[in-house]
Image (cartoon, rainbow, N blue to C red; front, top):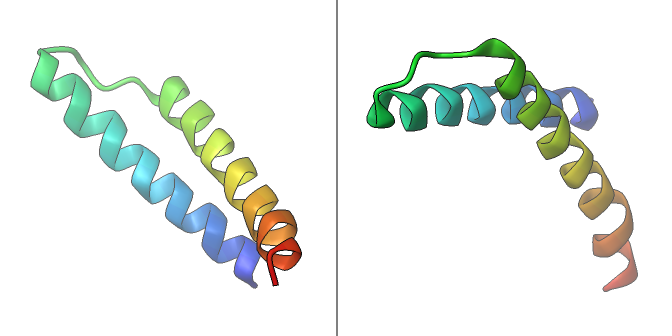
Length: 57
């Protein structure tokens, strides 16, 4: 369940950044970079959640 929530939030944050930042620069919204960014955010969250947090306890 936490993986689904992580993917949901990473997609949400990616869409937010993918819409706001290009619109501030005068560019159009593009879907592929947003999905790529969501994948990277998800992978980072998985690695941090599974590896680094358990090792620090």
